[in-house]
Image (cartoon, rainbow, N blue to C red; front, side, top):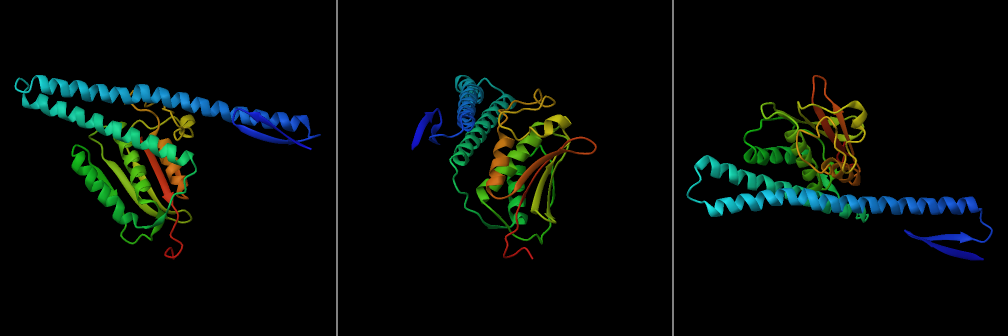
Length: 267
């Protein structure tokens, strides 16, 4: 005779005479999953209340100054105010996009992939980045003869943008950000974004892709929610690839990902 008992995260099926130890283990797993879900919910609520409010406060406050004193502000002050509004808006946009992706991937949504050429996508992204961030120098190494990989264009663009934003936040504007794309022996094609920032303590590297984690070595250098790299890892893995981070010799961080070859064109 079968019985069913309910737990915080759903139904656990049992059979009469089943080992009580197995039943307790099932209940423990269900309760642990519920605890993690509640923790994630609380972290997201905290994120919304703090991380969304901060750029909103900047945008509203700065726009108010511009509206109240349109004639009394000199040109450099007006330019700086508009820059603050633009950067605050971009921070909001990035945060909302990351949260939307987390929500989509959490539902198990299947990512539709198609063949793409990274030697076309990456230069276009960097050209756009150069227009918006003319104070940064980007160095690109992208061969012309790379085979197609399988991926989702929007996700790949967002991963690269997140990597570039991360490198820009934690490195000096006078140092170039390098973007290297290369064929990998086993993993398809890899994209690496390299900076000359402070890097990360070796013991923290494995946690960089965890949601809400921020390394002690970079926490004070720039604000952030600790979501960007976590979203990157989930997007890459949803496309059948892998993501990683490593310290560079001589200082700085390498953030990379690889996507599998398009089977029909890899040879």
